[in-house]
Amino acid sequence: MGKDVLEGISTNEWQELRDRYVASAVGNGNRHIAEKAEGAIVTDIDGKRYIDFAGAIGVQNVGHRHPRVVEAAKKAMDHYIHPGFNVIMYPSYIELCKRLCEIAPGDFAKKALLLNSGAEAVENAVKIARRYTGRQAVVTFNRAFHGRTNLTMSMTSKVKPYKFGFGPFTSEIYQAPYPYYYRKPEGLSNEAYDQQVIDAFESFFLNTVAPESVACIVMEPVQGEGGFIIPSKRFVSYVRDFCTEHGIVFVADEIQAGFARTGKMFAIENFDVVPDLMTVSKSLAAGFPLSGVVGKANIIDACDIKGSLGGTYCGSPIACAAALAVLDIIEEEHLTERAEKIGSVIEKRALNWKETYAFVGDVRRLGAMAAVEFVQDKKSKTPDKERTGQIVQYANEHGLLLLNAGIKGNCIRFLSPLTITDEQLEEGLDIIEKAIEVVQ
Ligand SMILES: Cc1ncc(COP(=O)(O)O)c(C=O)c1O
Image (cartoon, rainbow, N blue to C red; front, side, top):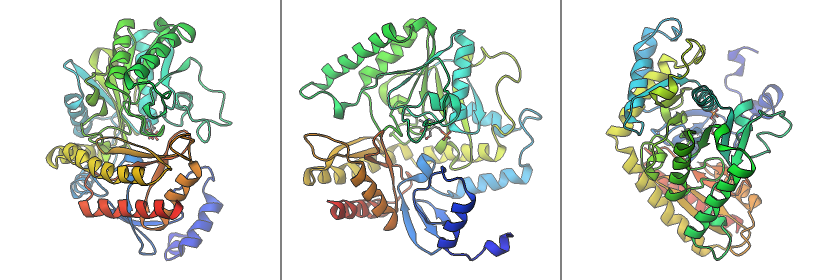
């Protein structure tokens, strides 16, 4: 069937074709077909309009088709599409590495390399840490998500859908405890709970893996797929110090939390901690596939054999041009401040829901990285995946693109563009409020 034949077909017909030709395991939030996306609004081929609280899963911090991103990408295409950095260099790759080194935290010499996807960035951070330390083990955390390749799937927690039936997994991957204040033992203060998690973290290095075998600890400064779980400053700085003490490379995975989402350019900056390496992707290039590893030059350059890092499509010049525009937009449109404002609006509304409904268990946020956790009741805190699913479904059917999160799938997360208008934000929150009323 040629393109002409496919034009003008209905949503239902697309759905049939999708079912027939597209792998079933590829996820879709809903059954609609996008026609256009602009700012925080997506429209489908039936002319239905959606407020976007998903942002392509955290990709659209500057909004869909920001005019400056579109212009930069078009301009880049007037030069070339892909000469291949491994074959002949081009300025935007070098310029973007320079910009990433300048904005990454840390007062030391830095370098960067560019890749395609988030998982690929994480894979490369691990490769670099192994080469630098000469060690093999990798530590991640409970509830972590780092990707779908064999290594990153092994570093990820959630079995279904991410790992089930896909083994054998990579060896030498270990998962350490990570705090979850909403689910701490009853009666324990946050400080006492922090100590409990730190004690468990220390035992982990006695019972499970020796620190001197560990190449890197990879941490999401705020857990994304895990349910937007925010650790304490104390825990994050404890892990940082532990790495320093034991010569372990500390990697902050900023793929979902980075680029102004949490009210800082990078989430790790909220914890006054400087990582050795950071992985970046998603909102970096506003939808063009691009990722990177940035951090200490001496660690990155421990990989000293030419060709040992990189790949055919890594650092596409179109994506690099888009990313350079994104970094300007974040700065010039003050998106870190905007993230805090958006987060406070969400929080205010969500705290009202928490007060009103027994099944709204927790509201948490760092900047605009906000989540609401649904439970059967406030006392038992039993995760309510079913009701969360109903809320997400209602939203998707009533003009709001919304995602869930959490190991038990019982949280909704807010990943709207940071360029969303106040009116659009309120309109999206109204839809969630209605959804909550309907499912109560
Ligand atoms: C924290 C984190 N790391 C890694 C990844 C993997 O990125 P990708 O899907 O681009 O491979 C994700 C994706 O959601 C993520 O949230």
